[in-house]
View (cartoon, rainbow, N blue to C red):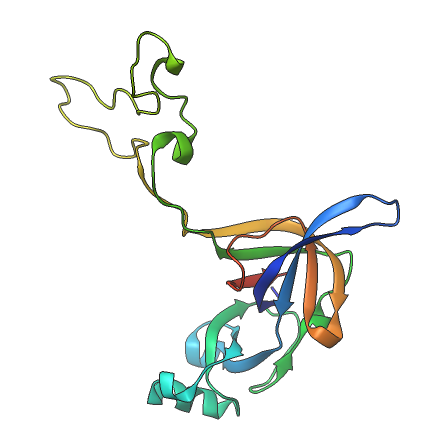
Amino acid sequence: MSGLIGKKIGMTSIFDENGKNIPCTVIEAGPCVVTQVRTNEVDGYEALQLGFDDKNEKHSTKAALGHFKKAGTVAKKKVVEFQDFATEQKLGDLIDVSIFEEGEFVDVQGVSKGKGFQGVVKRHGFGGVGQATHGQHNRLRAPGSVGASSYPSRVFKGMRMAGRMGGENVKVQNLRVLKVVAEKNLLVVKGCVPGHKNSYVIIQK
């Protein structure tokens, strides 16, 4: 599966040929450097390791610097492996946004925005206790009963309760590529992708 590492720039909207306003996300996709080629003989599987976004050498370990030096490039902030890459690449090759075409569909994976500690209404869509009736004074957004009485005398695993929300790996599938701006390494896809502005995303085709 071919792909690139990118950075989410932000959202905008464009008009199609019928005059319809389409919401879209702009992604800075690549260029990525092939930092390692995995083979069946050495690693037991075939994959390409790509690096994206230059990193200051003083913030890198000696081992990482040596690894990137083999590929003839500087240290990278984000490194991702892609299996079953469509084209054959060599160590140090540069892969840019030109591997994508307008009109095709891609999957975009990223880390969703962190929401912090949230209650059950926001986190799971609960309606609140009694739907604000039956004399509930100030606990309209409470979770209500969470378990049985003397048996089993515990709360079952997986009970939907308040807790940390967001900050999870999310993949959005089948986003149509609306525009490819090769000279600026920009990819415009229909709809929204996970993550905040300037967060790293993985684009797969």
